[in-house]
Length: 267
Image (cartoon, rainbow, N blue to C red; front, side):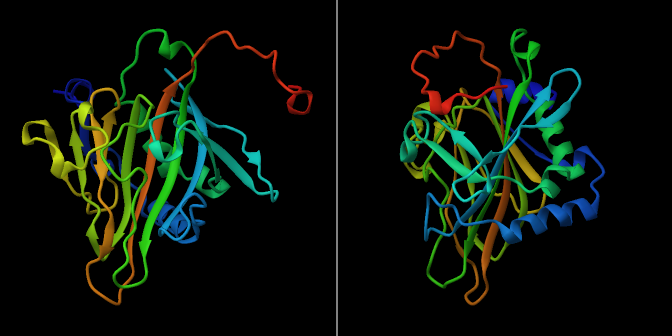
């Protein structure tokens, strides 16, 4: 059975990027270095979470990736907006604005290959691939410096993301206690894995080595990653992950009657 069929039939797939392509050690080290300077997640101050986010489009049939232009933030920095509708109860129908990926990260050959590999595992209707598919790329790090603290992902329970497909790729893991993944049936979104009947808990696993990965089909499963703590005291704990999601271009009539003049953009 191909991995594409497994994602479609089972709702999730585990794989290792190193089994798919020859990985440049320099490109991997460059990606890992990007996580050294991630800014703190401003939506989770003090919760030991750090992140950047940018958007791109991929052209079906060509696997050509084009990065979407960043916005200018309040302080003149480059930022990108992220919206999940009602799928993240912590930010219900709210836009979040994150610092964008660096130019060096966007130009990293390994990152672009990872996006292409993920996209080739997805499946679409015929209309979906007539237009560019939108790609969201998140660099997320959980980091615990003080003994007794923990770092959590958002939301901190089984959930769905709202995008048709999401993939997670471990970039580095240091001194971890926790950071385990769980996959369950969709109806258990909002619960913790221990509250799910065993027949509905489809998989539990832990990404341990760089470029170990998994992907989910959002309508078919819910998923979760546990909080992290230090495994050994006195040593910083870190878990660095690249999350990549895919969304089709949606064509619908747009009402612009209430757009304010100050918000008008000439293209």
